[in-house]
Image 1: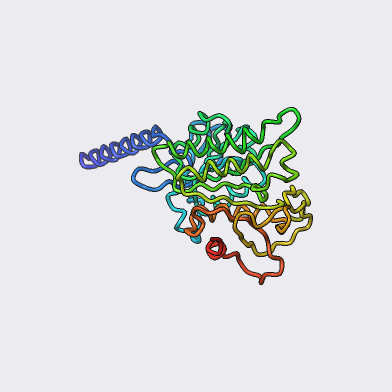
Image 2: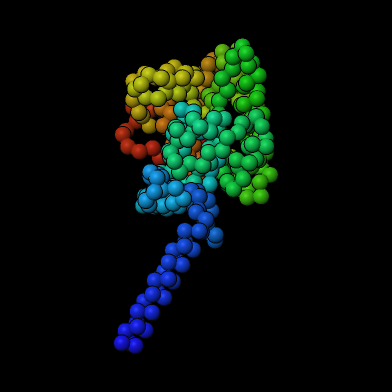
Length: 326
């Protein structure tokens, strides 16, 4: 009898210990998605969505950590990156975010409308509301990052004629300054600009100097001392949806995917002796921008993009394409 009572007492003590451990775990702070772990590289995490009231998914339940976003085929060169994407809710920016998440890269999105961004972007993306024209919000968003992809673009209008200067020049300069001044440094800065940025006499400059100010933004990056790549597409297309936005090549309705080619700055444009680059899919521009973060041959270059429709089928060899540009 006495032995049975002692056994029951030990069982009750074990149950109390387990209950205490469960309470301790419940009180522990939950790790947020994309936050750096102690002693390790930053990783992106997906979280289970909260359920209804009560139960495992009820109020107060910690988000469940799932597998990293990058699969087994993720490129190891992206390991340790945490990328600030400016213009992340735009047509090209959203696709850049997707490219980075495929590689398991934590992404911070600097956006003007956080509510819209949370609707449009995957849940593992960290959203920071701010504006590239305000250095304080840029610096706040960049804190903890070590790379930048800038996909911003001004939309000038008679009511806001200074937008190209504010966004494409001053805004880019703010991103550059934040990357320069942050204690974590900057491993790579990729700027999506435009074909024709070297041309003063260009129809787009009639719209309050769109290309003129893009070029000034490029120069701010090139003078910075940061590892950089400037990517200049021509006409941007969403593919078969016919929603392309022309920059030297038209909308590209029903555009077929071809092989991306790269050329030095000044190859394409409207000036005499220059070729038109035609249209390119936004998804291809996004893939080039993501690759530029890690391709060694992309460092310190301005590349202009075109698409060869006659090239043999197969995946794009970005390493070779970047290496082909002096």
